[in-house]
Image (cartoon, rainbow, N blue to C red):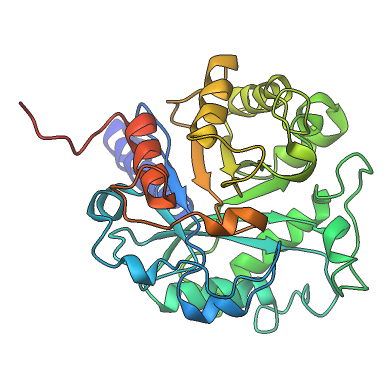
Length: 338
């Protein structure tokens, strides 16, 4: 074989491999060339259609994002990822959504035309969304008490949200089949495993093979219920930081899924939601790291439903908090240059 022929073969192989990598990384790998991660938002209530919801109390009459149209230009321009709403002012097409595996055999049917996860992907892609992250888990502990009588937990009693290895394998195969059938835009998607315990997945080696099969970890930190207070609650900074640092050491994405947050109550004082984040950062949770992303999950739970959604110029509003978080994590500001 001549050198020229070998060169041509190697060049062709390089192009082929590059094409495979591009296909797998489309949508682009988050934060790949950045000094910081992404900021995401779950906008709820979106509009009056969400007023029928009852999670942590009735949402009837609560402030909506639709009412703030035109009132959040900075957030609209600079937010990176949005969950479940294509009708707002947000400029990005990148989306994330949550998905619960293991609620029933019917939902988990591996026929792509019947599977509910594929239906969700098709729904958002049909609306022009680019699915960046799928936050997925086995939501047994809550689901079994909310009418999902057939829900099944994951393999570990310490954190029943954690998936089985075979769950991930089956989902990956289904992704390929769905794409081959023309149902989805891509043949693979970024699976971010939502966990319930802040560090069990990192501390227990039995979980590590499962983590290796997904693109990252998402941890929910609330200001309510067992998460209160910060110093002694479920989301203690030391455990959260340990889990986050272990995750990024594996080269995986880590999503700090923050909320719901409190509003005026016995525990509240102004900017307590910012203080919690600053406490995590001081404890070692990376504020600016290409693999660490901050997604706000600030739906109206309990007395939190009284907090205004906007405008973004109100620092106490949800959009005001979002604007502040973008400035902190991405190091940008809308303040005029002197």
